[in-house]
Length: 156
Image (cartoon, rainbow, N blue to C red; front, side):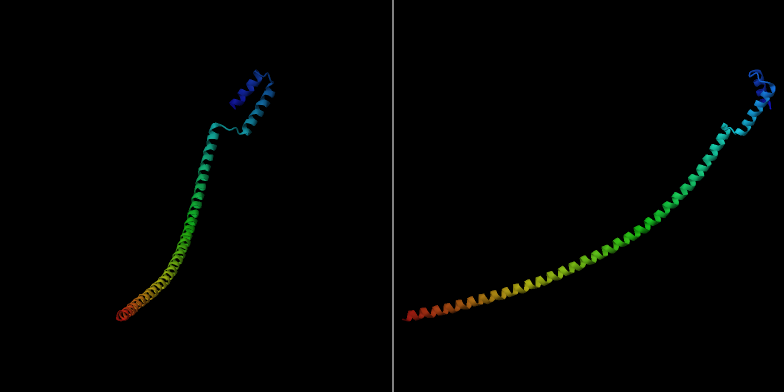
């Protein structure tokens, strides 16, 4: 009310309004001020505090959502990693078996070829022994034939 009276007085003295007009203008201004809902520093501070609280709550909600998502992804990664480890172990097992099978096949081929080689060496040895024996027999026969021929020529 004190502001209302001061405003009317200013309008009458400085604005040179009639007292009824000044009173009407003062009441209109008062009505506008009452319904205008001006933002004051304390109101702004309160609203900022509310906004900060809402942001903290939203941030915590977002953080819990992110943490839950991270946990879900960790579980998925662990499960997928386990599946991949299983696949890798299976493939390594298959490759080990394949390598072992191929090595066994190569060992068998080497054994067959080695046995064939040993057989050929033995055959070659036997052939060589036959030829040596034949040469020795031929040598003995020639020596005996030459000795007989020399004896025959000596006696002639």
